[in-house]
Length: 408
Image (cartoon, rainbow, N blue to C red; front, side):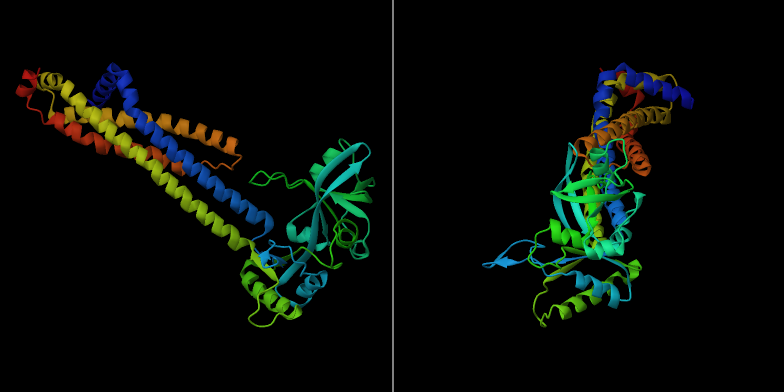
């Protein structure tokens, strides 16, 4: 028989028992869909983490106060007011590998303009903050030096705040009330959109650091800051800068050797790389678990093909009696097993793509469909079909024609 005749004969046999064929391929469908879904979600998580690193900066260090204690109980990170604006200035002036230093304080505030009001996060910052964090001015301008140091009551709005308070108009030059304190809007920021984890990065506004310290944020130490963002000149200098910052702050704060720091330094790149690695391991684990479904599907194909050999023993005997060779019988049953696997794999790919999108949408999780994972899952399903289909096909090909004709 020619190759085309073998393929047509195999497909005809599968069509004759359409329901059984569908149920046999179900294991492959579920297995391929599960593998694609798990790999897509895992890759999406890694891409999301990488985008966060890119947006913040791989060479970024975040210095924040350590936790305070009350009656021996830790009050949480950042509750101690141990960092000052002077600490930030010293870091920028004395450490060679630093490109930008941006001290900041933040508070959730109510913003009012006319009859409109909006609740957002207000941050008190210096001019360097916009460079360090990658913010670009959209309209208007940023802060002047005298406004930052003198407590000027001016504000720069994020895109979301501007759209909600000033729909269809420019806010530049208008006066808004931030927690009942009037501030003049001098500029707006270019939109960044949502982060990879669904957070609106534009729902924010900025005011000069001194103005925030004096008028918005109540704190016992007037010069205290909540966070100091330090941008190293290159990623290779991050570890050196981190060590020098630690030595400097311990010296400035008079911390004796052996005593714990009253601050903490976080390396953004290391934090997110650790998270990316954990998500990568989890994705591989989930994909490995999902791959078990492919093996189960392959075993199901082998079982059904063995049943099919038994049911079609007489048919096999007739075919051999009229001239079919053993390799023809072997090829037909292999083609049937391969067809079940490929059809199941194709349906599984479609189902996996759809389920990935649905899962990502429901969970608000980043999604990244990797074509290599799709090709690999499809190829693996074909390999499973051949592997598990070979034994039934070999059994069919080795039947004795006379015994097969006598089979009832």
